[in-house]
Amino acid sequence: MQVYSIDTGLFKLDGGAMFGVVPKTLWQKEIPADENNLCSFAMRCLLVVDGERKILIDTGMGNKQSAKFFSHYFPHGNESLLGSLLRLGFHPEDITDVLLTHLHFDHCGGAVLRNNDQLELTFPNALYWSSEAHWQWATKPNAREKASFLTENILPIIEKGRLRFVEEKKGERTSFSPCIDIMFSNGHTRSMMHPLININGRTLAYVADLIPTAAHIPLPYLAAYDMYPMTTLEEKGNYLEEAVANNHVLFLEHDATTICCTVEKTEKGFRKKETIQLEDLI
Image 1 (cartoon, rainbow, N blue to C red):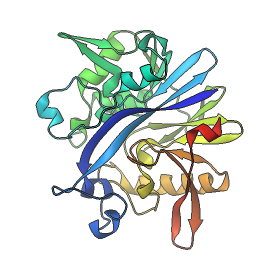
Image 2 (cartoon, one colour):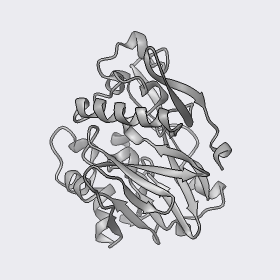
Image 3 (tube, one colour):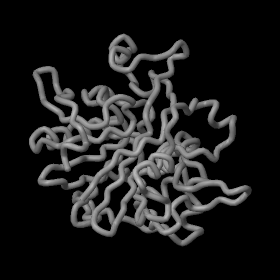
Image 4 (spheres, one colour):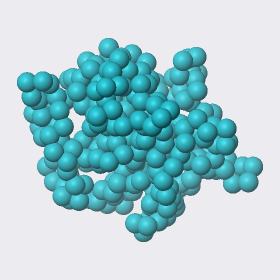
């Protein structure tokens, strides 16, 4: 098995929204804000090559939205989804599976591209995986979350006949492949998926927006974007107990500087333990 971090660029979000009730005097020590209170965050994806399967987890924001849309999020940096894949020797046609943790625009926008006036799948040979409960949630969104679910990112997948669902079992994890189990959470959004990847006896956990950055490891550090913050608090605490006990490596999708880290439990609660190089797991 091989795993590759796929950099799709950076974007900006309001620091207060990303850290909820935590005061700026605390969170800005970890992630500084600009004069508009905006912080830079990564949109980092993961490619898992397991035998004949090439599984891409999330796809970043993409580049097909309007200038007005991008003016709210300030995408920046020199990296792109396809550019990062090509630099590693992979082409869009090589991808067999696209596993979308959830369908917020910054996680699935790159799954679909605009070719002139037509919307096409970026990875034409891939199956695109979501959960049925989350798909229903995203295609019939509530008013608070509606702006994060863009139909042009979602509907072409089912229209092209490439949508598949990962079975969600209450209280259990789902086997996606011999090396990947799926953990579900429901605090950030309904039925968000977290691939847990077994690499040489260790677990690489794609924590997505349950723990978007290393700065979000302490329990009270919850994003205001979470639909059900108390659910996130419980899910995060339960998972971090497991991560510490089993020495999981967290893959951080939105941390602009740290790709992977481990966690420890101190007298002050959960904290980042050490930075891990992805290459060291292989």
